[in-house]
Length: 492
Image (cartoon, rainbow, N blue to C red):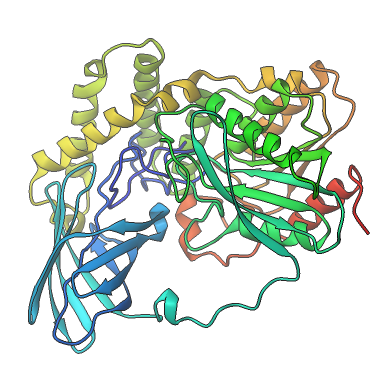
């Protein structure tokens, strides 16, 4: 939900367009997710390029990690972990030793890389939307085919496909080894187009959760979002209500299986998934329980404004910068909510970005070779994102109504240092809604030092995500598992 700045971004809107996942635009806080997602499509020298090449882009004083996967001399894809992008196909790969060029068609404009291969290293310059920077790649880990396979887990795994009548959804079902009908949990991702592991910065929280639950006798179904992996559809053209339909389709699928207890299927949603789960539960009495991980209990506008202010403070923005950014955010949200033309805020947004350029440190400003192209790319990216059906729905949707109608058992966990879904304000709002709905079985808990991903945080800012140790805070997995086991029957 936090609309921050990135370096590259191949699709609009970005998968990180959410209060859960977007690294903040340090200091400036303009509500634009932007941005340029670039990627290389690499060519080959006379030495074999097949395999993984790892490195980074340096742009405007920032570093963006990238991994390029070469299938052969002229076919490649790129991963950009900080933008939760994987497997992006690179185009126009050209190589004449030692020079190479590769391109990535991106929402804000074509990203081009021109470099030189020498001594197992590729270095060069990239350009996109008026901005220039450098990149560097070195040969990395073996390709997937060359890696030694991990030992199989002590439980079954099955690739499954199901449908909600409008889209096909693909996922992984993990099953405890014992024969019988198992309780099950359906995982629901946060905002943006996420894969079944909800992968971010190389961290796969849903895979880790599924493994822990399944080792404790609980089956888990996790699936790719619309338009990701094996699933059809389009996430940005869908809404939270559509995602609730997907979760219920997953529930109906599990109810048909002889190895799943049809009366003990719950939903576990993270971030926006914490809005989806109560909405689905309010529409079906077959949902046995729900677990909400950093689930918002306030409407999208209040969440967006709160997170923008908190993240900017954590990133040392001045009071004036915070005040100006929030005023512009509110202006944009008013236009979107009232269904007006984005031209209502276009000029103001353009001027804000130009002011930002003028205030940049010289080393950042020098990277902007064409200020007009840079400003235009950011404005157009912002306009496209706020005009999506997803954003319009999310901005005004009030989760309290579904929470009041969800009468199944509820466990809600919040992170003490979560700046994207602030713990105290959301816990208070959620408890109020559950009590108003006369829910008799709910537990709300704030976990110390946890950020939005339930990793141990210093400030809680998303700018910490890429460098953090990818381990859940103590008690996170155990709290969820022990609570589930009190509400289900495990097959012995």
